[in-house]
Image 1 (cartoon, one colour):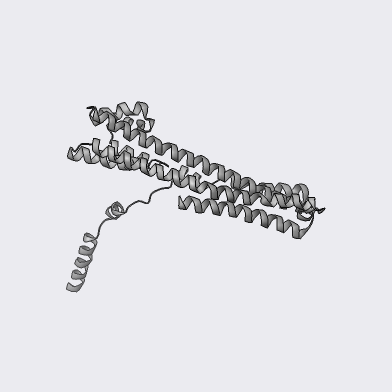
Image 2 (tube, rainbow, N blue to C red; image 1 turned 45 degrees about the vertical axis):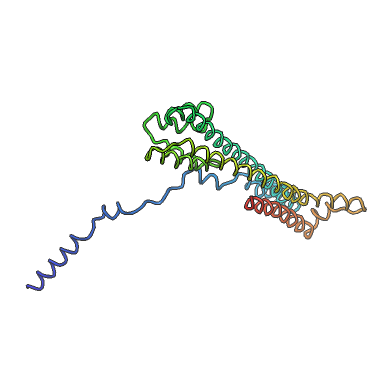
Length: 265
C-alpha cells in the first residue's frame, strides 16, 4: 500500500508542476495572419484572360479559335502585367521621393527651432506621407510606431530609418537635425542610383519587347513572298501548336527580361 501512495504522490507532483493549458497557450507565438489585401495581391485578374478566351474561341471556332484565344489571352495578360508593374514602380518612386522631401522638410523645421512634435505636424501639411504619423500622435500613439507601419508600404523604406532616428532622439535627447540631414543625403543618393540603374536597364527592356513582336513581321514577310502563314497557324494542327508555343515563349521571354532587370535594379 505504501508504494501505491508514493506513486500517487509522485503523479500529483508531476501534474502540479506541469504548466496549465492556458500557460502553454500563452507561451505560443501566434502566426501572423495573412490579410485579405495581401492575399488579393497574389491574385492577378489578367490571369483569367487566356482560359476565358480559350473557352470562348473553342465554342466559337473550334480548334482554331482555341489556339487563337490562348495566344491572344497570353498577349493580353502579359501586356496587363507589364502595365501593372510599371504603375507600381511609379508609385514606389513617387513615395520614395515623398519620403526624401519629408525628411528634408523636417530637418529644415528643426533647424529653425521647432520642437520635433510641432515640426512633424507642420511638415505634414506639405508632406502628406506624414499625416498618419500626426494622426497617431494626436490620439496618444507613438510616432516611430506609425512610421514603421508606413515603411511597410512600397517605397516607404526610408521611414523605418526615420523612425529609428526619432526613437533614439526621444530616448537620449540627442539632436535630430544632424541625423535627418545625414538620412536625407543617404536617401537622395539611393534614389539617384535607382534612377540611374532604371535608365540603364530601359534599353534591354525595350529590346526584349521589340524582339517579342518581331514574329508579326515574319507573318507579313510570309505574305510578301506569296505564302499564307495565318492559314497554316490556324487551320492545321501543327500550325496551331506552333502558334501557341511561339506566343507562349515570346511572352515568357518578355517576363524573363523584366524579371532580370527588376532583380538587377
